Amino acid sequence: MRHGDIIIEKSGGSDKQPVGRVIFFDGSEHIYLFNNFTGLLRVKDKEKWDSKYVFYSPFFNYIKGGTKAYENKTTGLYNLKTDDYVSKYEVKEVSIERQKDICKKLDMLYEIIKLQREQITQLGELIKSRFVEMFGDPITNPMGWDKKPLADKCDIITGNTPSRKVSEYYGDYVEWIKSDNINTPNANLTTAEEYLSEEGLKIGRSVDAGSILMTCIAGGIGCIGNVAIANRKVSFNQQINGINPKDIYCLNFQNA
Image 1 (cartoon, helix red, strand yellow):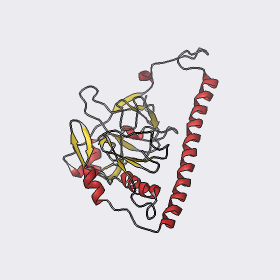
Image 2 (cartoon, rainbow, N blue to C red):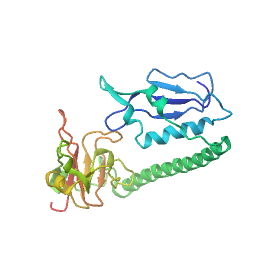
Image 3 (cartoon, helix red, strand yellow):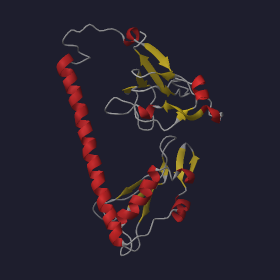
Image 4 (tube, rainbow, N blue to C red):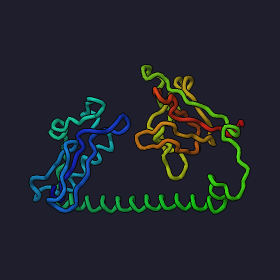
């Protein structure tokens, strides 16, 4: 591989994570290789095109879901119709000077985002240490706090998924929370990408602000056992699965 190469994912992904991710290679040349699950894009004319600028274009296109139309699924994996995608996708042509200026600004923005993520991680660690400082380790319980089973302190509510075959069940009435929305350092739900209609909510399940949602099946980016506070009224799904039929549980302390 050479500096400035763009690696594109050809095989992988999932129902919640489309195939087609791209990364920009800025490592040492002629040392690293790429495997058959990925492809390599290399700028031909570097006098006309800046490699980083070319990278940012399909990078943002992926974020917008632009690779979904070029997916097919075989043997449980999602594959990108790479040749078809690359031949049809167009990168906006501007002067090389403009390209470098755009990349400079985007690089600065991503450096800020990186620093903010590091701060959030550190704040999360601070919260954990402060909790232990005030209450002790919840497992060893060195302070001798009285403990009660969680099931004795709250109502446990399961979700429900309106049929996907009825389009009228989905709309813009109330957010439909999935396990990926319960993966946040500040313990609040992230904004849902999908909503139920009023008709869909009659079949679905909603909870009021103040309820706690916990994942029981790992999502695309989530983990089992993640918890978040519903700071607004939401509905949440039930994933049908042969091993564990519940995706999310709601722990409701208001009526317990």
